[in-house]
Length: 418
Image (cartoon, rainbow, N blue to C red; front, side):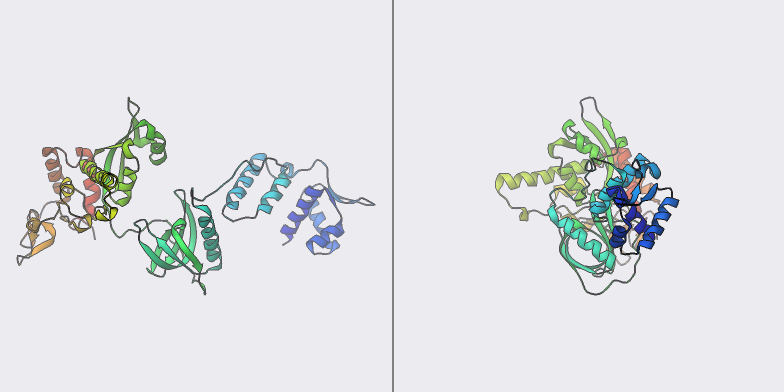
């Protein structure tokens, strides 16, 4: 309390240059004797404060005194003001605090920086959600809201909020979800009908890392992409410079890897004709098929409801054959040894009693046993790479196909480590 009062006295002296002990005592709700003890403490700390008797007198600072000469360098002042300006955008400090420090530092032009953490077009909703979530965390109040997931799912959640996190240009809430009985993350802008519930939350420690749980372990696609020069600004936004190779004609070649889910499809389509997927070949066919759907909507008037959405690979790699047949992704199965699609009954292996296997193909599994019991994961990858080379690289160039297989195969049942 005393340190706060000393700061207040120092601020008033810098702002007004002269003030009486009585005025300070009234302002700070203490006795004049306490004020004089505080003045002695400031003087002992090296602040050039003195008292002047008579009419027009009072407690004063030396005319040339400014705080930066006593305590902080100009660079340190800038860092403090920058931090306060940033936290002001989150409601973590008051504008009066920023104004007072600017006065203390005798710095002008304090409006050179504006920090706004909200998304473009989010309006006031995200700010209102932020303020409500912040108060719920500080007061340990449960929250209820309607949440729209990245897949378009709508659900009502009740959570115990623990931490606000700014990541990837977005605000997220890390909270224990009472609905799912586990930790979840929620993007603030996707929350609707947000309300604070009665009662309090028990103390819980949130996970150290903010990671979005996924019910499906999607394999990663090793992509080789070529972008038009007009897309350069977005390429620089999304990809690390080491992934980007400029070409002689101004195009940009990018090598990267992403999980094969709905987000990847939307991301690639968002570039329109500024992007060409070079490999894997099956992703060229995926984009061709989806682009044809878009064309059909606008050229024929066919509705979106007539199309089934791409749902990701669901534990297996999409193949070109998949896009020549009308088989929804969610209905597809893949051999849990070699990755072969199990789209037809005759493709399945057999169990000991002759029943079809739900996990393995006929080449890998017969009569309840593996046809090559001593084969290793490396052996199966080598076989698939040979097939890829002999059949015109349907899985992309050999190096990229091998990278994809080595990231995917450890998730298959036969090679998954317990």
